[in-house]
Length: 450
Image 1 (cartoon, one colour):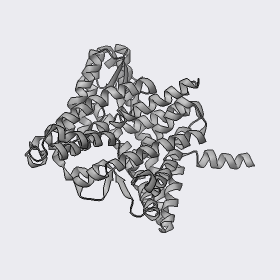
Image 2 (tube, rainbow, N blue to C red; image 1 turned 135 degrees about the vertical axis):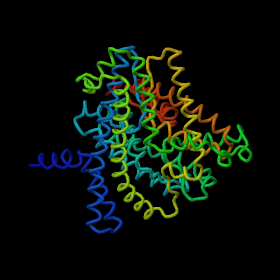
Image 3 (cartoon, rainbow, N blue to C red; image 1 turned 90 degrees about the vertical axis):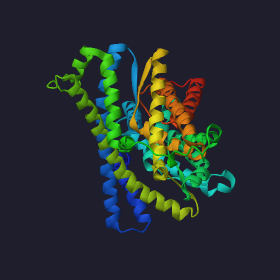
Image 4 (tube, helix red, strand yellow; image 1 turned 180 degrees about the horizontal axis):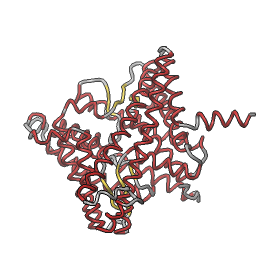
């Protein structure tokens, strides 16, 4: 009987992410003295969001994987896509292969919760830690907690409790320290009392410090200049994503040749044998990948929206006066032209990075993704333009694009995933963190777990 009860709670309930997240959201609403009916509605939305995210991510990983397989078959080059949520899910799949279905996601959610509590503790002890920011960007939190969990488990091969604790400490320190560094520059940009809490915080801070040495913010402020209306479409995330997917798929199809394109339309891959025209097939692939991302992001928004209501309420009750760390998109309205500028020069940098991989015959080929390309470079551009004008923005975002590609290629080689997070911090700081854990595991003679 005891085994049955343990199985019910540990595997059937707390081992299922869609139920675990619903329980967390329900408790959060009740803690804020909301009506039970409202708490149940929030819990249901969170649960549905988790399932929708899984469906979108699973389809995206599978459909994008066919392109990477064709690339590898034709050239021998290992391909890896840059995107946040597929990286988290690909990590979980590796863990599930060894530990059992649903284990990776459950451990990741535990890491998320413990890391959030530790973040609150660090802020509560701000007299000693100097950390003032509570990280509240739920969509980034869930991904970062998941990737941290996989890094620790992969290289140290520990059980759930030590893995979750160590991953939580690293994650909470990253959240607290980096978002605190951006309190002052974010306030100078917005005039509001919040800070940026996302996935390019280190590069945001670099832009804040370096931009004044590269340009004149008074003379070269892009927000005071007129930009072509023809570039306005780049601010529509779905259209911009479809464009990037179209370009990426087109390049891969040009590289792989006729035989592999025929394989792509076969029943073994996309099962679109009726699409005999290659251009039509290209459009179908690009739009299908975009649709997968739309489903994934809608799922993320559903559960993150409910999760953040409870998290924000809890943090405000426990730590009045703390600075809220929010999504980087919160600053876009303060500098819309900088956002477009960042996307353009970030794309230029990524192209240069890809050329570098080809010139130096890298065994890994990186396929850009919209989320790291847009949100990273748009945010960095806002900081760079504010403190150094458009010239600083152009230089820093171009360099960041190069770093995103080259740093991600290095991360992929160590993590052995077909997806990587791709954002600036995960192509720099987190590459170093991965190397440290890999070195510790190797020094202790621990075999790589997955």
